[in-house]
Amino acid sequence: MSTLLDGALPPAQTPHLFGHAAAERFLAESYSSGKGHHAILIEGPEGIGKATLAFRFAYHVLTHPEPAEAPAMLSDPDPQSLVYRQIVSGASHNLLHLTRPLDEKTGREKSAITVEEVRRAGRFFSQTSGTGNWRIVIVDPADDLNRNAANALLKILEEPPRRALFLVLTHAPGKLLPTIRSRCLPLALRPLSPTHLAEALGALGVALPAARANEVLTAAKGSVAEALKLVNHGGLDILEAFGAILSKTDTAARKEMHRLADVLSAKDSGTIFDFFTALVETHVQDAARQAARAGEGARADRLASLSTALTEKLATAEAYNLDRKQTILSLIDAIRAER
Image (cartoon, rainbow, N blue to C red; front, side, top):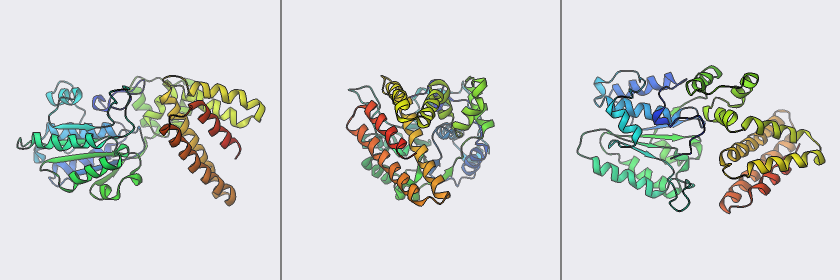
């Protein structure tokens, strides 16, 4: 149960998918051929529609359980159909959505998909065996599996039950166990084009700020999730503040740094804090690549080392629940030192 961004719909309820017609056609045709793979690894950046595609394909399979009778293209789900209502309500006996569970004590999502969650898949298959129906598991995303959970999933993938389908989502396939990747058919999705991104936002009723529409579409890099963070969660203001801080002298920047850190460390600021940390990491990585292309080898090496150090600092801060404001200030200081 991932945190839903302001303006977004849960993937299971999203009526339309933009920009991935080729992937939809591939899934539909491979299924109708009767030779489809039992595990599909749907790859691509976060927020471009991977989960929506997975639920659309699950709806397609459960609506047309006999492959030979299924159409060769996915269609928008019928909100009045029993299959759709069961999927949306989480009451389908043939679909299991594995994601990070809630911590009963804190009410917040756990930091990983645990082995207990993957074991639910084993019970799911045993309870529905003998019905003859398809059984579909969506792992959303596999990047969140801890080591034990990943190994547990691997065991199921190695000996899949009959008429079982795994839709495994990943933002970073290179971080998955090679053995999991080797047992899945990869299906890579590309970021949305500006046109498709604008269409997707329009379908959600999200109005782009007229004066900054192009800025949003560019900065979002083809991701609906990033666009929503920019428009509805203050991301545009964070971008502007970060750029201003990097352009000012130490004395002039210090007050702006504290103001930004206060915003990012406020209560219930998790979404925008994550947006900022991703912004920081991307900024340093881009600077390292630019230095390398310019033949500035020493600076490129320093920036690459800084990127690794920042990632480790963020992981340590999260693991030990360190003061978020001080973490932000130290990140900015480290970046400013390498300008």
